[in-house]
Length: 439
Image (cartoon, rainbow, N blue to C red; front, top):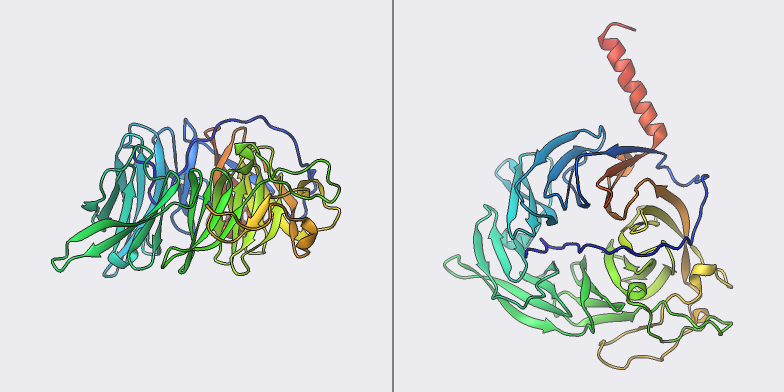
């Protein structure tokens, strides 16, 4: 099965909801005060991809790819081709002369890839290994394609676990997550311009399945596992730069909130998703959020219980805050604030240990106290977007134009600023009156 194209998402199971936070209707820091419901899918919508400043695509279990205008909510295209659910979607852009060609690439459970070509000059960006002008896809094999979407080479067949995610590395290398291991592949071009792919290293430092794999910057990438292991890797020599083991379990008898090593439920410690801006990295850990500084290699902020159930997607905001969505159907906006002791309810016992070194060796003391990290901050809820009736799978931001979310309720919602939208509607009305001679 084709599970990903440089990333993917597994279906999330339902969990019991427990209310943990309530911000009320007054949310002065939340400017998403208007919503527009976009209908078109008839099954779970799992993926959103931004195409340009105004357009985006959505895809999911109905096998459809829909292209939308974020400002008007208009559905521009409906693309059919897959016979089963879409399991990954990304954008791929290359320039030929003065023309820029951008394509949407989708992978499906029907074991096919579908290429949707657009010709919009103002798109930019690369997907895949841009130094060789190729892109990769895979399930049980790693397949390498050229810019004309012709298969160039592929790796040998792997076991049934397949590849769950990939990232591009320097020197024409690719890191692929396969169950508990990260496999490093290298692409080589022969003198006869023949491209080949070969496995060069296996990194076996994780103790359980890898759920997240991302690039941090040109020199670093990171991975997160089902049991809360977060590893920061050197992108050139593939050595471990930092290691963290996130455990939310806490001791109920220790008045100083000392953290004990225990066996938390898998859903409480599993790293579902990672995101980074090159300096900070956010890990979605169960229903909590964990913010890590790549520069200092230390925890800078956290929230043990950020949602009622598992967090599925996160994003760092330009103002220093972050956004998250969850299986509980909510989208929440967070602001980093200084941590006061005694801490707020979500801060008592935020993780079990944080250490540096290889994950298969004993590292550091078994416990650590909150008081030893005075620079820690908490995440304060500043906005709560409630509109979906099912799990919110992910979102994509268009800056001042708004935010788009997708969900298991088959709907997309465009969240916007009411004042801005009212102003735009007034301008449009005046223009129409002028055209009709009404002014």
